[in-house]
Length: 353
Image (cartoon, rainbow, N blue to C red; front, side, top):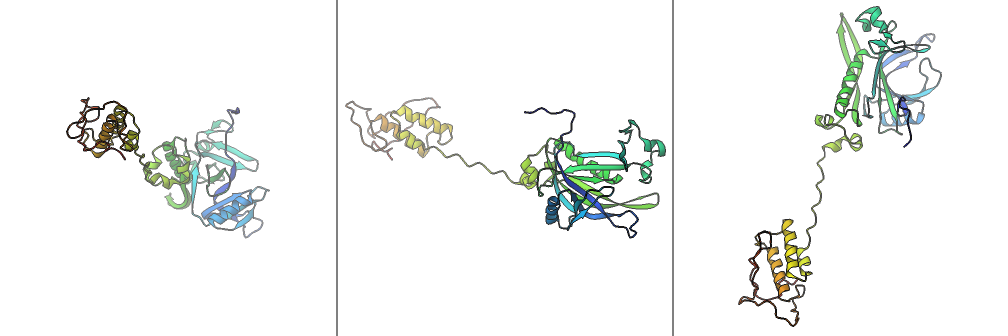
């Protein structure tokens, strides 16, 4: 196996973005486009093929689109889907930070305590106090949440990145992802449902409406989500977790009679009976039909009768003497041996097929 740079992140290819809003042109062409909150998901990508596949699956029309402050044209579709079925990859797919962007790129990136780029205490907290997040986005950093998911019904292996700048959505999204990670420890993929939920918050006498992207495990039962890592097959088809296991076909029972008729000595026939007894195929006391047939075969072998044909073999030597009922005197054996109460048989050769 090849070597890796240990300090470098190993990220899957990003195929596109998942958004919860879009922009429309301002009535005044000299002003910036107007942001619009979407009731359905918006998918964008540099690849028209990916967006076209999304439009076919989720509805909507493919259009060319240039993001604000960028010059490279992309493609997007405002879908008709308010819910997406996705798969969370292994590891922690969520990244969150407070960020402030300018024309020169990201100017601040903070975890709420330390501004990471300059390695200083949180600037917004120091300037505006504990309620700094209630101030205008023009003054303070925006909470930014990014989550990578796979859309299994779209082409190619890679992730789609969902980005949200909602303060309240960030908390809800983190709670859903942490539930998944608590169950899987990040060691397996997890199927999830994602939908846009409109919420309302009243504070300071003002009502604020905002969308929240909900991300919850998509499994038949809660126990499946909390039962540890799942297989890739289950991530692709969660319903398989609720299907009853297919019982293994019962093993075919050996043909003990055929084995016994091929034996050359009565002791070999007894060995066949012992195997049948270990397999539970006979009554240990010998009261079943199979035991009686095996006893007869053993008796025939001792009497010089071919158990396959019933023909008496003449070897020039006297065989065991038969009693008045035509039966051979039985041996006395331990409990693990075949039964000693051999059934009476009228004629030699009764064990032949």
